[in-house]
Image (tube, rainbow, N blue to C red; front, side):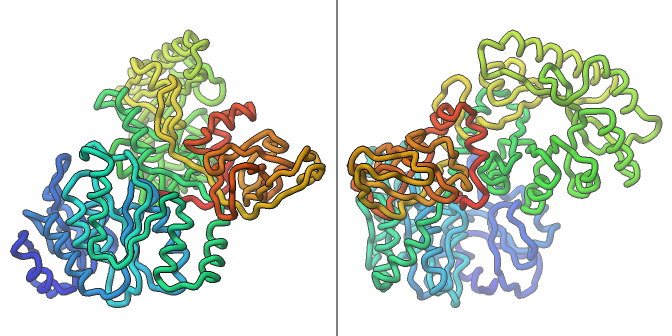
Length: 603
């Protein structure tokens, strides 16, 4: 779309400021300076004003980076009007999806089911708001053969604006519940507002059982697919085991832990071990986008490099810097944890060889964990090595330690002793260095139980995923689920699985689900040791857990192939699985195999 067309469409709504006189072909729109890609000269910036920020303050910065077209004034209406015009220029089927839960899951499933037949444009991530929808629709062009867009609202009057932009030809309603209902007088009023998206739809699909598989099948029928093709593709897709990660719940949990902290206290989020199995890149980008997080921390340099390549710009601490990765750390602007004199010497030498000055490092104190770190008696020698004559290649950014038992009341006195020991060491180091150094020792449990000792920064790990040391009901972030492959009647007296360890006393309905110990489903759940949830009913595991499959007893549930089976989530908390195995929630989360597909969404 040419700049002249854009001015003609939105010039009366908002002010279009063109910093150059070139006849630009506008390809990209952005509303946030962090979104700027590699083509600034073909980018238009909408300076949106919200209750928390004003896009106008980024104009000069973006102009210096090459952006030359800016929209100010009533920029949101201008953005929506421009996207609506773009939609009118595209004559193809458009699927509009709304509801309280499941929008992103249904959108992604439909994309996978239909991508072989259509050139599809779909909402990126969960772009379903007053800003996200026009940015999604802007992707359409004359080559688009099918579009799939989400629409989310939080108050009356919003859906009419989104309907004007999306103009769906096929409507999909997912589950409508109490989420985000604060601005609606009733659930029925909320539903009435949401269905305004479909006022011009030829077809509207709603599955009252809220089974996403059935919803997708209905959409395929509306597009003219035959039953054999629908069955084949859905079976191919739904056989996949998925870990669904709710990024909205993640940031809500950050907000909860933030409530314990002073505004000036910084927060580090631990995203090591693939973000506890949830996907380090997607989780880190969501945390960065939240603007509630100051640092990230990973275990090894490769994890940090992956985040940098994905566009994460937050400072990243490397907790276990390896000798062979020191150059990689510096090349990617990563900050190492220094926990011993050999590590300090190696890193200072490597930084000096590169001619670096004041490269940020973090000093670990062993306050009682007895894992890694310096003792109090080593502080004087440590500071003497850090106070080299002339220019020092490194500078201490923070000093920190680990609590050994902050989540257990029986160790409270020991925890306080650790904090006191750490504080003495940190203050001694700071006094001798003579410049500001941050202190931090509190973990997730420490934030809840010992917030008086928050110092300058805290570290949030397992709490991100909804686990509270004081029993607070936080939001579940991760749901591991799969689908039933088959259901058959097995007669009494027959055995199930390898080793014949389960022998049925009577006829039972036995289902097979495509998850096994290679996916992270622990073998100790074999032979009634574990259970999964099907149609709201807990169904025991029968027979030995196999590498790729598990058998479950679904007698009395009327379960069918294609039905969901919840391994853990709201209906079956991870804590229960951990208790049965005599382990901790960390192990359950991090055991989910990389071969399990991760699906990310926001509600």
